[in-house]
Length: 269
Ligand SMILES: NC(=O)c1ccc[n+]([C@@H]2O[C@H](COP(=O)([O-])OP(=O)(O)OC[C@H]3O[C@@H](n4cnc5c(N)ncnc54)[C@H](OP(=O)(O)O)[C@@H]3O)[C@@H](O)[C@H]2O)c1
Image (cartoon, rainbow, N blue to C red):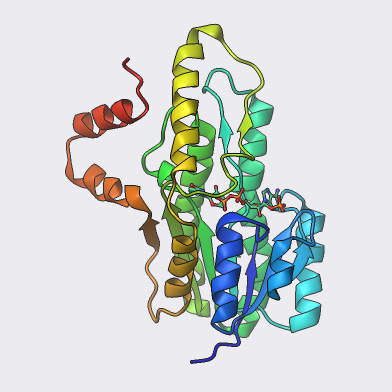
């Protein structure tokens, strides 16, 4: 069935955002994407690209206004923009940790606050927030990323209760490792403590490998499609090869999961 709902996808210049834009466009959705530096490549595909930095109140307000001036409505927000910061808990500065939250938590909050008045007026709308399996199974040397994604998950569950009676649906996707630009745009805490060097280097080498050999990001785009065409979307959708670990964490003793996580990151070599 042809679709004509208006969708806004943050971070549509690469990775999940780009794939989601492509898939929704092919299904007839009217797709708008954002990038801090448009025009990005999705424009070639027919996606309307807006300049928007989720870290900035003004940028979010003017980007959303530009969209609404053109479309008059917004049916779906895919809150996807983000990056990963690596660094030990002790090594990472408070400023670096806050910057991670500014994009990966408050960036999504900012977008939702900007579009909710429109969705409430419409009496309908849908929000899909991109969290991470790291919210559920945090790895070492990515604690602030995992914490921002876990905050997003908890906040989304609360939001879902608040907006349901206005006809607004909220879901969260928790991807495992996927081959996108996330590994190349990864930021690293500047200050390092030599005692952690061998652990950090080991973990980051494994992480780079995990991204390099990650799954196809179109799986996330297909999941977004499934969510926005579902009558009763769930709160959480774990996706990717690692999604089984979410179930295992619920079912198995913590010591077994912890040993598995330490083995994956080669922490006890
Ligand atoms: N890849 C994975 O394995 C994985 C796993 C779990 C969760 N995730 C999450 O999935 C989301 C998408 O990441 P990806 O893997 O597709 O990575 P990606 O290819 O690096 O794409 C990230 C997108 O976010 C945008 N972005 C970054 N900071 C932004 C900001 N301050 N304001 C606006 N846009 C910003 C980038 O756009 P511009 O640079 O053009 O502005 C880019 O389009 C992220 O939230 C990430 O944490 C990824």
